[in-house]
Length: 83
Image (tube, rainbow, N blue to C red; front, side, top):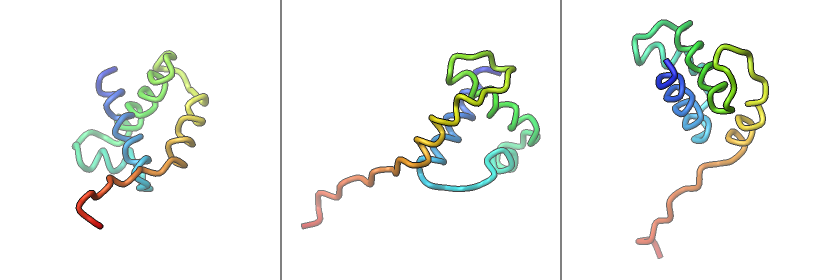
């Protein structure tokens, strides 16, 4: 479960970094076939694991990291061919 939780949280952070706003657990459920409640549990556990906390506890300390990723835009790659 820890590997899936970490993968779900990493995917969630990538989606936030690219500026997409969506209901992530529902989106993950639709695209993976996993029940929505399981996706919510993976996301919550992934957040906890990212901070080094126990995965089965409610963690509010991840909000700062999430806000930072939401506010930091993805830098577009430099197109060296344009002049």
